[in-house]
Length: 187
Image (cartoon, rainbow, N blue to C red):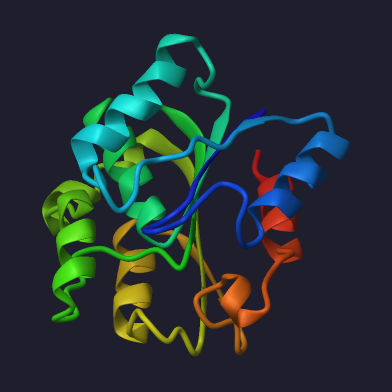
């Protein structure tokens, strides 16, 4: 098993629960990679794809890979898997969403390049053997209906975390045991 972890807008691999997850994966001798995607400058699908393509070209992931994305990192990974026809073990979305515009000019412009037409997103079901969507019941940024809609679109097992905010450090989430537990259940 290999794990690829993607942060979201304004994110970094050394924030939120990602360092904890890396430590846990190290402890379990599970190979992983956590690229630094350029944000906010160069936050668009083509530039993030170029970053991940470097790892793909080096053989860092394959059909035994679990992709984990936080926030817009989730839809980026879904789009990447679909656009590159990657068969994978799983996609796990933490606070994942698609096609959400919030009248915040900066955030909308950063996230919109990752969005996928509804009829196209369903292709993930054939490419990712397992799909999981974890979100909270009080996300301050993404409406509940968008989080639930995303889980339904990708035909994911849905887990709702009570009072988890945006599943980030600001919500007090620097460890993410439920994500690790579910990741380890993937067959």
